[in-house]
Length: 341
Image 1 (tube, helix red, strand yellow):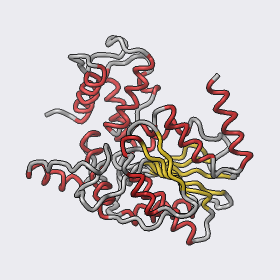
Image 2 (tube, rainbow, N blue to C red):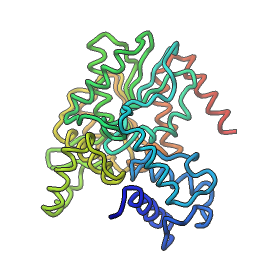
Image 3 (cartoon, helix red, strand yellow):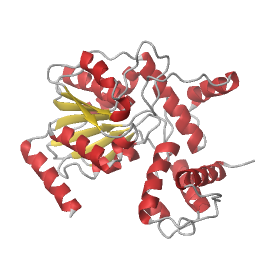
Image 4 (cartoon, rainbow, N blue to C red):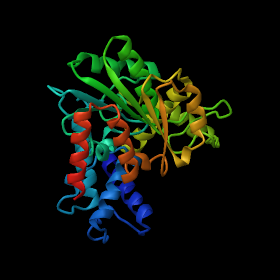
């Protein structure tokens, strides 16, 4: 029987072969042995985080271990985290900070996807990220947008609310950011603005929205056996842990279904909607929901580039910066200039 660690090692090797057109890649191979540059390794770590839902970083590949050893380390980390709540990830502590930025991941994604954005946000802002409950640790499933938004709003409400809050959501996370903003403002908690990153509105002529592309292309239904298997996985993922790839697929499908059932009302005041070239047809749909103080901005690239491409991340930083106090926005831009030198 193939164990979870072996499955993860094979999945990482297959992803490496696919991304760099190298064949074959074995779990016993290392990145140096494959001839990958440091830039290629960083790109690959990003793809592992995105496509396998695994929190992997530079420290995991330090010393150039073979892929199998990396997989073993990642699985050990997953096991140790399973009974430690990880639906909230603190990048920077909130104590004493004048602004608190909240980042909400999309379906099938973890907080690690926000790392490029965190690196360019003002160092004087607190930053917390949110992901699906049960993604990396034991958690009771959330079946609706309202349930997830209620959890996030409660988490923010329990914190020190002397801060000004800004909510940022990618894809389905944008739905959650909008709904959470409504809940916070109803409680009198100050939200300076909300940023939605390439969130896709469901259209009446489309049965299922996807995270990887615009909702305009209906999917061919998978075979019945595969659908029944996915129904079962969606029902039990969270209380039960699967291998990384299967678990990510089940968690992503659960939130996609929640997105498909949800109908957004009017956007909160002071909302910035960023739409990629891939989903450019969404601009017209967002315009129908926009409040007077909302803005809709086109950004280059596709849905998944939105959190990683240099120009896309800069556009998100600028959208967040529009809601920052002037003094903080200036600090952020100064830090970015220093990094680019």
